[in-house]
Length: 205
Ligand SMILES: [Zn+2]
Image (cartoon, rainbow, N blue to C red; front, top):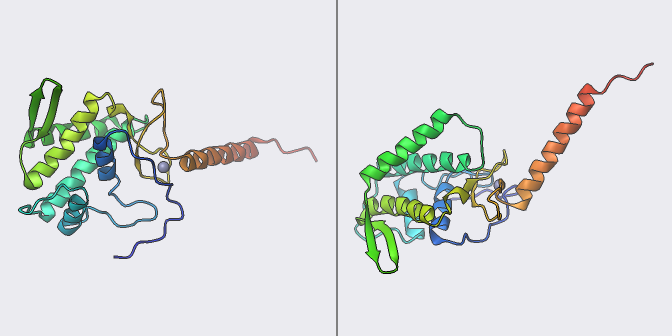
């Protein structure tokens, strides 16, 4: 499989402070992006490779194209929620559908609470592909328990489709990288210049 060069791809972000954040960001970033046209969850082979790269596979795992389609559906719901975390304008209906879908996945893939003197965590209840879905949901629960869920975001740049972990102190970050924020500032400046030109009165002859 050949990959395109990535002239516009942002620099790689430092790892998030939690492994669960890294996992979910990697998950949403499997969709095609500038510099990589291929969707990493395109079919069962692609999904198997991705799961293996995150040690979420096991010898007995059977992955189907339907599983790949389901992971793309789950990814889409996470993406919409992460977009909402940057205040991205999107219909409440779209967010409502995503939240409904996530609830239905939660019912389909229940987690197991593990309680001890140090605290309580939720772990996958199964192995195989079912366990892989549960691990993704468990990652979301872990981040919520750490108050880190609102920091899981999609970049606001119109030419970037990456998820990122917002490290700003007041959780106000909107871009995955300084490159994206600088590009957005440049575009905003050009837009203002165009408007100024458009409204500038014609000098008297
Ligand atoms: Zn970006």
